[in-house]
Image 1 (tube, rainbow, N blue to C red):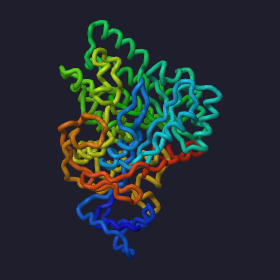
Image 2 (cartoon, rainbow, N blue to C red):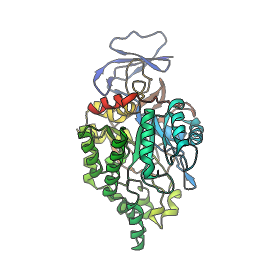
Image 3 (cartoon, rainbow, N blue to C red):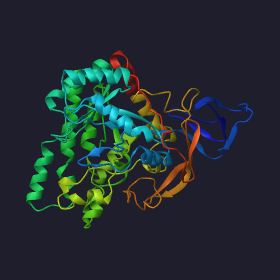
Image 4 (tube, one colour):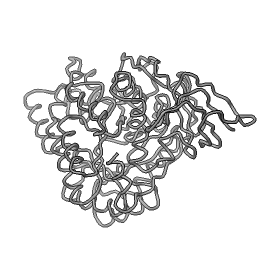
Length: 471
């Protein structure tokens, strides 16, 4: 069936214009004024609304096994949360155990995603490295649609790659035309401070941000940049949370290095005061790594988005229920790390960005969709409203107000880190491949509707990414 959206202002990352959108067979067929209406086409009146490319969240952890439990949002429920917030594609993480075959882990995650209600793709974490891993990285890149490899610089003994092996992994990714990404924290500082605080009797979650200082994040960011420069590969730093880490990225970019950055909706909105609640259960809900930072770091992130030093916003959706966190209430170092945020990411960025005058609507589209599509090489299939693109479209009301509540959100957890906060701007309807999957509070997406999005590798020299660096 064909679909015609009329009356909206179409917003892409480089321009906006009032236009009609004709959709056929899941793709955008035409965008323009006074388009002919095919016989039998469904007409959607979007007068007064913006038509945006479906959001792309390049950092989620859905149905992830961890420490004897799993994240609460799976690919079905997490996908529903995504669609309700205007996000149509997520890039999740395959995280092999140390010593496990990367291909075996990839197949396991693909099986988990069979019930996905939004489109999905995968980064793959390199948690160990030898000749067999290098060979499997090639298979993932050439045959499985993986063009990005994750490197943890924290969580020693579980998912952290041996620092001596990181240059080899970076170099192999570069040979394959794949992007290297890093979780940048200093893993020597974290356990040292955890032991010190616990010895002082600090067991409350307020110890968590103290044991994950900005200096440790900045140190790891500088080191990751140095490794990427030595290996001659581009670098993508996930969940940048503080000014000190951002300074390292800006310095690298000033020297012409292809270093890119992502920040989270939570870090743009909340600050370290959330850990000061006397109720340990309430404070534990905000435990994530890196933690929420002081207010001045939050402002640095907004400035980074406005100036282009940060290109992408994500959620790092990694949700745990209160019951799952209960085992760590007597020792903050044992609390599972992660928060929900997939549903509210785009509202948070519009409210704090466009509504507050920090970002233009075009910049909003860039940091919530287009830049991720370009960085992970799925543009122009995703990330734009242009002929030939997937018909992933969000009809957005810039003046709508939404108050977040765990009673109405679509996450599989019994709280929200944004509980009671009101955000201006939000989706009225979301279309995935031309199918209306969300309208005015109701998600209508069957399990399995989401498609796996294979991402091609980059060409020699990563010229595509270097062009993005210059822009």
